[in-house]
Image (cartoon, rainbow, N blue to C red; front, side, top):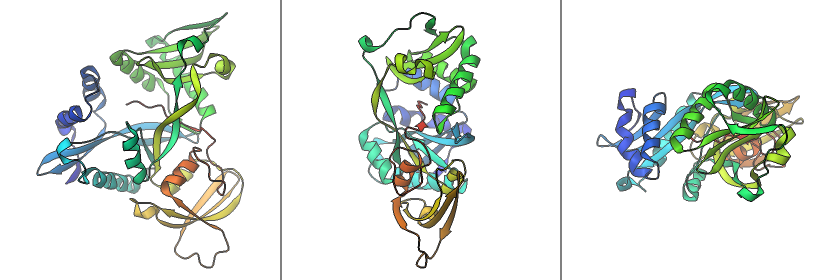
Length: 340
């Protein structure tokens, strides 16, 4: 049976979580269950009243085309080792995604821990939408000079840091987390638990950049364009990192702007959300796209393009562009360097 846990039941999944994520330290697990789990939705699949699978849905505030949206981040996907390869998780994903569709969630995202897991998620309609760049070797990192100062962030910096971060990320990216004071407060808590820190750059008393360090690697780097080319400590290219999935297509498109003008018909296949299957006529002009589902397209003179929901996701978020469709997000326009 698939259901969502009540608040007082959530601690019951800790043994399963610890079994499936032995690499997490006790300090981190304590922090997550005590500080972050309240307010998280937890879906479970039970067999004879025993929890055999679970996944966590963490509400996040995401800026999607300049519009604040509540998006559910899928985290902590786990199945008891004795119940794996029996379809428990697939059924739970199907239920959770259908629930999201009914709630008109525009999209969801997940960060796969392994390549094998990524392939499983791809079969369920997810697609990579963002690469994570590796940190440059120490000898290649340029040090600040002259008026540019680098130091660890303190709690008194969080308001100024959030103002800088939101201004920069909303200018550079089409889809990104809302980096408000609460975001950086939680990041500061996390880095303290995980032995990392937040580093900031200051030029003439003004914050012009920051990095979030975890495990001697840069989790997140945002720099003002005045120092981006000289002070970035990230490699030019990255490895696939975050995956996303369209849930409610119409609700997603109304949040994003589109380039050009025209019409087309899409034939979309979705392995899980049946409402996303079929023919959709799209028309776009002046930055706005309209979407209408069609039962019969035999009389239409418009070109029909066949796409999986994953291919459409990759196109919309600018990760893998389909030349026959209007451009929506810019290349590398999706930036969610999430952790928990």
